[in-house]
Amino acid sequence: MRLFNKRSELPPEVQKRVPPGQYLTEKWPVLHYGPIPPFDAKRWDFRVWGEVASEVRLAWEEFQRLDRTQVTADMHCVTTWSKLDQKWEGIPLRRIVDLAKPRPSARFVIAHCEYGFTANVPIEATRDDNVLIALRANGAPLTPEHGYPARLVIPKLYAWKSAKWLRGLEFAATDKPGFWERNGYHNTGDPWKEERYWGD
Image (cartoon, rainbow, N blue to C red; front, side, top):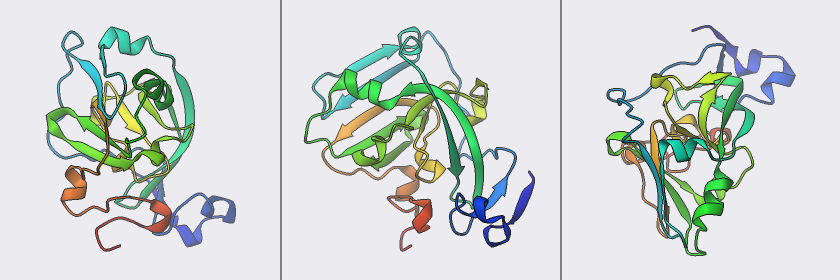
């Protein structure tokens, strides 16, 4: 992995895109806890439930038929690397919102992933146009180590909030800190505020 200099030593136009305390990488580091889950297209499904008017359950073939979009966004990891102009292709989260119709009581979105992993975000964090469920990255299908077949992508937050191996979304009235949040990571995860860990 090639790392560049500290943010303060980067050209001014690049500094504007790199949050405090971050370095740049040209490659895409692999970071996760536990084994990579297997994928079985016949058994895989995607669910949406909780504070919604219409619960959703889609088989893999149905999920792939949803409208797609392409997004280019910078990616920032809590471990201090940043990758600029990451290219994603997938299902805009607003498409899922259209299907499920969250109730006014929905204030948080909980990403549910393989092996019971979860990540929590305020519902406001999911409303940007560049939030999607990615199926492809940089012109190719997601690789298993980067979340194949689907991962949540919320570019404005640290990358652990862009949960890998996504299986469903729960719209909740109350916050439910996820795996990393329960183990010391900041509950919000805004890279521009350096919200890395509890107490930051």
